[in-house]
Length: 392
Image (cartoon, rainbow, N blue to C red; front, side, top):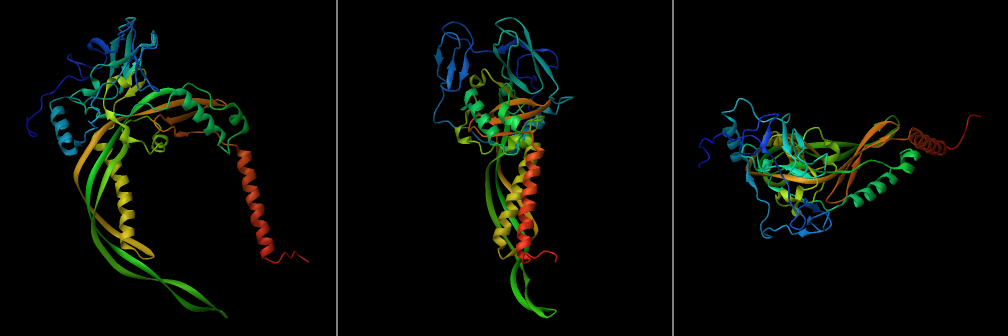
């Protein structure tokens, strides 16, 4: 099939049956991973990095090609294909759809709302996934997944260290800690690669000094000579990372970087077993707009460096993008919500590196004491600078 050939619409939800909001997917069946020893459901074990039965201890290796990496996808081809696939539809998939699958262990119906794709049965605890949703043709497939490396116990220990290091937190909070239940979640991300060609114009400022009179005194003043500057350069951007989910703590998740993306493996549904997982609800093109903002900041810094001098003025940067590719990744987090004096706070732990970012309460009294101490120091310095003489 050529890139310009029309792509026929496919069922939503990645199943062989029509998947509208509120109906069962794939005849009500979800994806589970039965144990070959006792028939219970296998879960991904963080410490052993393989599938393990929590009942009989049976272990199953994740078989894959160790030489195969996570492949890049052509950005423009993907945009065109998605547009063709959705051209004949009255509405595009939304994050408000509700799907139901039937638990194979207890028979209960489990709802998957919005972009949630992996969960556990609330009645018997069986890990369940929407079957084939990550490979649905009308959705961009998941290319890679970074497995959990930090288990729940290590995440709790890192959180305790984080609480103790909050200098301006109330003493009661540091004593009690952030109490809550960790939830393991795979969050969706886009990564973008691009070669940029940049043509810039601006001015380079060089400082010089002159001596001028001010009353009876002579002082040196800094002046700046400006010279025109222009040029061009190429710069390649690799794996510009953008969160592809809405309703998430964007600033907290951004602060979890850097991620060890070289540890990603080609997507395997088994790795999600026992954890929540979401697919994207920020489209590929919208995600690139966020990546472009980060790229533009980096290009401006690069342009200022190339202009040189003591100061720089950047008048324009004309950027052309080429060799654009992307990946759709699932990255692991531990998320927790705790309460302090009735107010909820959210914490996120990078489950690959252990980095902790979160909201926290502040102690007004500690901040006030530091401010007062700072004012006292400034006052003391000013006193001695003036000769230490008080009013006579």
